[in-house]
Length: 368
Image (cartoon, rainbow, N blue to C red; front, side):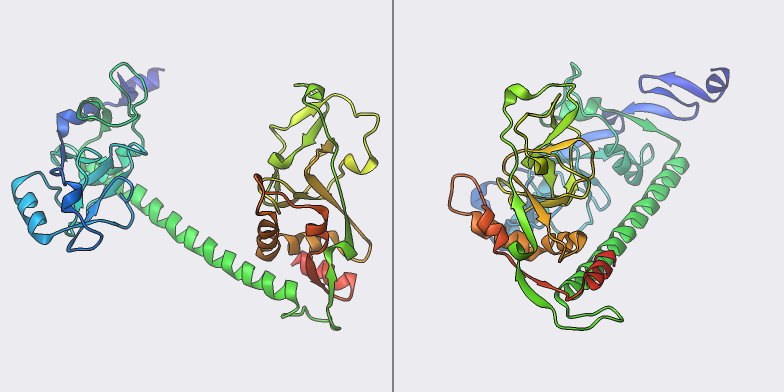
């Protein structure tokens, strides 16, 4: 505590360095907004993009004339290049740095602080908006930002040189994250392409040959159904987790919030007590999602199918095939027409797949 006191001071926002301040946004500038544009003054195409809250930070779908833009820009508030625009409705507090290009913004829904940059730089203010908590005067959460909410919002203000260093460091991290995301997306596309080639036989791994065989899924596996658990059987501290369609989510097994039962029903079938790596398919709602079981003490609920894979095919290889877009798309197509999407045993077992002639090649492809 003594060390903290030496290097910091206590404020409304907690302890901060002695040369930092806490300021209200109203202390560094006034909330500003563009002049109101009427719907009759906009069009689907035109000279100057007009951003509404729904297109803020994206592509404009509305425009105003150059004449109206020039008139409003000359007479009323308008952001300068570098000003940080804020969403005051919808998702509160989203920010966009104005690039100075001709554009107009929906009044009251998109605002900015006309800040004194001798106190707070725009670059630093942008990062502040990502951390502040927007509250009403009584401490509640705002549904939209009014001018007074903005004025009363507290931010930490270091000396200007430190503001610039903080903003530069955070921008560097942002750029690094963006570069990593591009690299991840590139590798994801490479993986997808490799999967498509390997899972269709267009590319063969070294040492394997022989024609692939076309089969129906039912030739390789049998679809087993789940147990009709009643809600009265569920117990908060039960030993077994009941796998429902809500727990089968696109290749992952989400069981943390599953319903529990204390003991197994006397008429539960052996296949309904799940084992690790059992292959499951959702048959109602988000149909065609597949996953491998990765938890112990799980039981299968109705409307989730379990594929009993035969010895002619590798389970992981089959899982890779069913994770593909073709299976998902076909199951969704077959589920249309009812009040709720639904697929049946026939829909699944009649799905056509191509299979390498040997288990060794199937295993090798699955491993890749």
